[in-house]
Length: 394
Image (cartoon, rainbow, N blue to C red):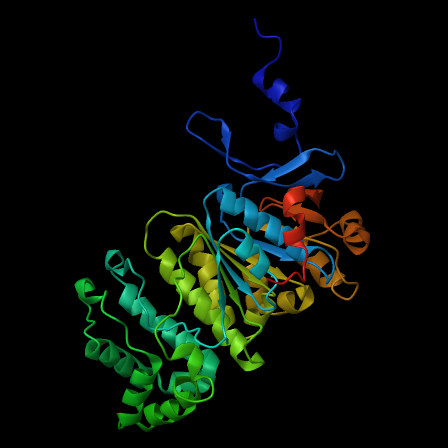
């Protein structure tokens, strides 16, 4: 005879305690997956969390400078790698390069000599995605909107569509998926066709795009992609780029990740955006990010955003919408000037508000989409600790 029911026995075990622990379950009902985020500050029990078992796979980590955001994000990244997730990182300050080298990942130093990403490249398995060519053209519109401004991009939209499709056709690429393995055209081909267009709007757009095709900034966009971008971990560092190119570069990387996710191969993918406010402060990039956040689940993609600019993010309609579309929300110590916006957005109690103003580095409040919350102290393996501290360079 049983002495304890299954539910009663489970309550005795830390992994299945009443703490905020959300794991996916297999066909036999047993918990599977999930990663250790830390120890519950109230009970000392482990806090396990599985982003893939939530209503969407997205996450946001918000906290003041020095609160432990990067440490927690890197810990989550490593544990997703252990599970076989393919991870891409947008790294404005080069803080993830050492970690990438340590685990055999790829570091793409955008802005360094010889490093290029062609925005017209189609994914290798594009033939299995019927709308890949059309999506590539739409993504190019978003990139050009960031490069030259929305008004100029919208004014030349029709001319850009014609030039893009003509450039693909001249390269031997047509709507027939069998042609999509041919080398893609580059941005200078599109600009050249815009320049030949009798439409004045197209000619004006060509003039605005010239610096990015053949001018001072042409090295990043106007050559075949220089690195393999589908390794288990790809870190894109932006610290070699001028400030005016960082947001376009972020959009270019997101577009590349989105192309990979569209291959329908079933692989779990995560894109981690450090200092995500850099993207969200630009209206075109913010709309692209919001569209990605809304659609990511359908493609088994997780969008993981990390930023210290909580008040700025929450003050914009699109920024607040992107945060709201993250089923996993983690708040670390907050600056006094941001706490009101954070408390309103996340419906914090007086105690939770006080916790976020005074908690030690690495302590956080995890909130679930259903309103459940738990505080925890982030925890990493001792062997990995030297890779997780912000500021370590490769």
